[in-house]
Each structure stands twice: as structure tokens, then as C-alpha cells.
Length: 125
Image (tube, rainbow, N blue to C red; front, side, top):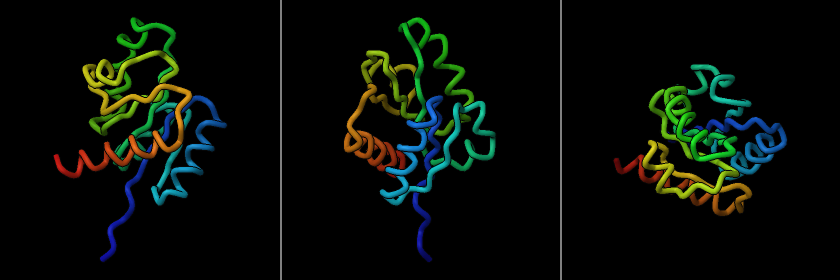
């Protein structure tokens, strides 16, 4: 029986970014759901996601630190890769509980590599 491709949830406030990422990642054989935020995604979409790509619209590190627990709580235990325009080191994002972080703007090859690495890590864990 063939295994279903991983399901990604893209939670980004910008509709163009959501559409572009959904198109590119779907072409890379992922099942993709998209929403303007995790709160708008709905519990069902969050629960069936294998990995969440969440926009981090933060202007300061303090705002990020305040919002991080809410984002992770909304993810309900599903690993989250943070996509952020804030200059945030991946290690700092991981220290807050995120699976990884990618600074915006990012190269699509870097995004795909990040998604693959996160999914591979989860398969081993």
C-alpha cells in the first residue's frame, strides 16, 4: 500500500506568499493546506499536518518571545518551522521550541531542504 506524502500546513498572513508556497511545495509532492494563521487554520488542519510552516510577523525579539508559546500551543504538538523577516538565529528559534527557522526572504531550495530535514528528523525520532 503506497504511503501518503507528508501534509504541510502553511500559516502565513500574506495570501501571495501562501499561494506561492502551496504551489511550489505541492509540485514537490507534498499535500498542502494553507491559512492566514494557525488560529484560522482550524483544529482539523493543524491535527492532520505533519509539519507547519508558520509566518513570524515580529518586529522585535521581545515580541517573538511573547508570541512563541501561543504559536506552539496553537500547533498542538505538531512541529513548526518559523518563517520570519526578523533576524532570528535558528538556534534561538529551536530554544523556544520551534523545529527550525528560515529568515525571509528565503530561497525556495533552502525552504525545501529545511522541510525535508525536518520531516527526516521526525521520521528518525
